Length: 553
Ligand SMILES: O=C1O[C@H]([C@@H](O)CO)C(O)=C1O
Image (cartoon, rainbow, N blue to C red; front, side, top):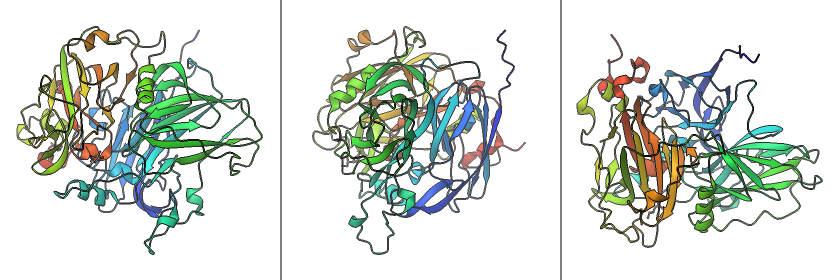
């Protein structure tokens, strides 16, 4: 008999957030650490476990909130960790306890969701294993989590102040790329004599992945970049993609994996090359013209010395503007045969979301259907549940745009964008289609890739295309047979992406561009569904705006 008697476990973590001086890419700056580390500790769990994280905010003078990216928070919408949407921020000196169930095996991440704090270094991996006795539909010997990030030397405050100034200043390209928290900045370019940059600092020695010849490794790759779309490659080794955002992928091979901010993938590699040497692991900026050197790490074949540099030059960077290869990878990702869940055949509502760069009131913004998102002061979940209708704009944003007349290929004037805190109210349990439509930015001949992340759900990815979405023809080409489910998906330059999800998770959920500065500049929306089914909110999420005193009987 195969009766599982293993009780789901409670995994208890005690975390302290602090600003500390660190040199992840050899340049010393203040970094947000979890228990002294950035990336923070990896959360290891088994499907069905309850994760409890007691977060003490010791940032001194700064609020905090932590989002559990890819965890749907079924029944616990108040622990999604999205400041302004699901909770008030954790005040300096206070301790907030997150408590949620990890209900599906897979690769997930956690990161700050307050202001632009993620790029300060507050992020880490979540790895949820199958219950005892169940096995994955692929074989491997070892399992490793690798976080990819881009890294800036300016503080998030300097960046945010520049973005929200009438005299707009853009964050620019990152100073370096980090692999599992380590990168290498060229210190010779530092002109400030007071800055501390030391390429011999052991904190910035490259990440080393040691492999035993002949063994197969499952690499769980996650991107938490502030801006960059990345390619990831391992010299001399092909990778087989087997998982994306917690869902099994029909396996396919790549030389170079494209990964967008907020996405996670598992790839399998076999250590089957010449074992007498080491190999380069490399990540590069794609989709924007790079001004950042490659991020490098070492694939170390045991028993070679882990720091021995590979005898070959670093691999060639993939061409940054090769849009075809990126679209082609997107189209290759399908649910694993026999293991995917097919989507409902039809939807109840179609929401077209046009992504544009705008000016609103003289400020540079990003907008969806010409509405730029503005956080209210009282989190939506609390305002909705307690019917505090004065706390956000009650007019919902539009379900579409003037798609007949709008030309996505040219620079618009866009001076008429408005800012709003209005949200989409979805009928509980209905099926919703979202069409992300990309367009030209405010620069001539320019369109950018945007990775969109949905909280509280996974969506089926029904299709991608280039150009303007055709409401009549394109839905006929949807993949309703084996679409992958994901929580983050790119909308490619001048392209569209079609998604479907079921609005069956009571709560208020953000859906936004995962580029940190773009969300900060208004590139997001909020969905509400089934608010009347949400249970009593914990008083710990309250204390700001109109929720002051609400939690106390
Ligand atoms: O929001 C953005 O602003 C800059 C640029 O468009 C400013 O001109 C850029 O690359 C973004 O992604």
